[in-house]
Amino acid sequence: MTGGKTSSLSLTILYDNIRWEEKALYESAKRKGVHINNIDCKNLIVNLNKDFQQYREKIILQRCVSYFKSIHSTAALEGLGAYMINPLYSAIVCGNKLFSHMMLQNAGIKTPKAFSAFSEESALKVLDEMGYPAIIKPTIGSWGRLIALLRDKYAAKAVIEDREHMFPLYHVYYFEEFVTRPPRDIRAIVVGNRVVSAIYRYSENNDWKTNMALGGRAEACPITSELEDICVKSANALGGEIVGVDLMESNERGLIVHEVNNTTEFKNTVRVTGIDVPGSMIDYALKKAKS
Ligand SMILES: Nc1ncnc2c1ncn2[C@@H]1O[C@H](COP(=O)(O)OP(=O)(O)O)[C@@H](O)[C@H]1O
Ligand SMILES: [Mg+2]
Image (cartoon, rainbow, N blue to C red; front, side, top):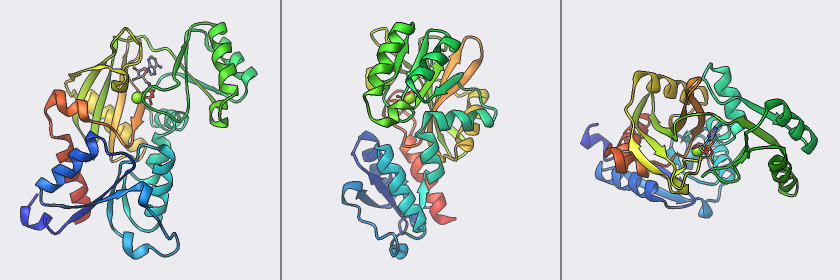
């Protein structure tokens, strides 16, 4: 990156919460002499028919945590000509576990075996077919929320009955096999066509979910060529440019991808690897601005 050239460049960060990551992206851009236009999604008002001039060819880092705000604001701004990182297709697919499953599978990437059903009766039937233990996941969600391990049909009945009293989204049933693996998973950060950093995530308190949001512990993970290849293929399959790919080391099937995050968190990745992840993300966005 040439210092003189970048100082005239600007990037936009669209957010709904200011996390460590949004601050780190902002600070990194500032250090590179890049002007950052911060937009709080709460204050965003878009004339969907007219605001072309304001957004055409603008490079916008989409950082909204809310899936619904993220996909709708991405659709609006991309439709007005902005270059969204990540694009609308990727935002829609990455944010939905059933959609991601299909796209990963069709791209030949190993992902947990899964079943779907659309009523209480069918859900219980499909679980009998799959066998227990199984995992129920909301198709849209994060931080491990509402993901439950169903050990037998009594647990399944109780959880499914609860879901039937929730918002209709939760009546779309998505189940995964419980993958036997070491007590950890892998979060790899893909920027463009490479993995810039990866960590192992271990759960604390013997929980089987390894989300950092649930108090997990992180350690640096070596970036093997196999890991890089799978992660880049997964990002491409879902149209993501800057994503966090989550994988498990299945005892039976080797590395399998269970999720691709399109507004990925990377605080713990930076903390344990010391790699300048936000710097790579800003450099990538700048390259798009210049091309
Ligand atoms: N099929 C599975 N088998 C075993 N463990 C799983 C499986 N799917 C997810 N997990 C564990 O649960 C955590 C949360 O699941 P994930 O699909 O990433 O949902 P979220 O979007 O809420 O983070 C994962 O990080 C992993 O530790
Ligand atoms: Mg996850």
